Image (cartoon, rainbow, N blue to C red; front, side, top):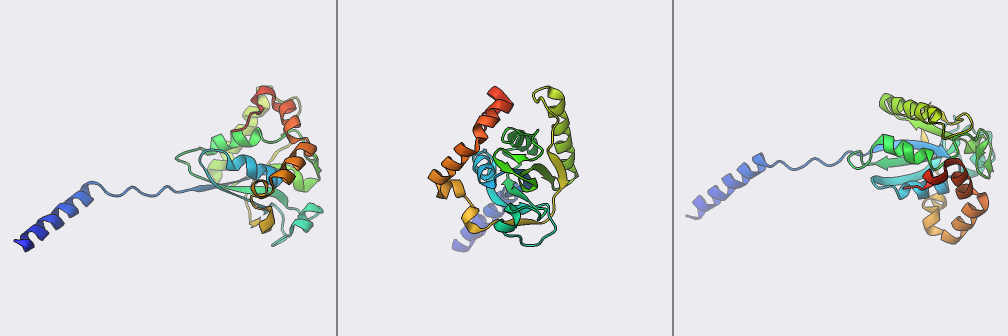
Length: 204
C-alpha cells in the first residue's frame, strides 16, 4: 500500500509540474547615462520604481581604470556617469529616458550646473540598436516640443567600458546625507532644473 501511495504522489507531482512550470526569473537590462555629478544622478535614479541598482562610475574615455582625481581634473576623455540596472517588466527604457531628461539641463554644453568641464557633460550611452533608436527618437521629440529654449547639447554614444568609481562614491547621498544635501543646494541643481522644466521638473 505504501508503494502504491508513493507512486500516486510522484505521478501527481510530475503532472502538476508539467502543467504549471515555474516562472522564469526577470532578466534585467542596463542603461548608462551621464548627467553631471554622479552622486546626484545615482540618488535620483535609485528612487525610480523598477530600477534594481545604480552604480556611479566613469565611461567614454580610452584610459583604463581611471581614478576620480584623473577624471575630475579633465583630459581623461571620461564622463562621470551612472550605470542603471533595471527590470524591463517594471519600467521601460523609454521611461528611463524621460527620467534622465528631467534630471539634467540638456542645453548645457559645458557641463552640468556648478560642475564645469567635458567630464561633466550630459550623454546617453546606448547598449544596443534598440536603445540607440529610442534615445534618438526621444531627443528629437524633446527638441521639437518647444519646452527648451536652446538647442540640445546632450550626446548619444555607443556604450563602452564602464569603470565603477571608488567605493566612497557609491551611495554617497545615503552614506553622507548632510554633505550631499549641502553640495546639491550650493551647486544650484534643483533651482536650475526648475528653471528648465518648470512644473515638469518633479522627478520620479
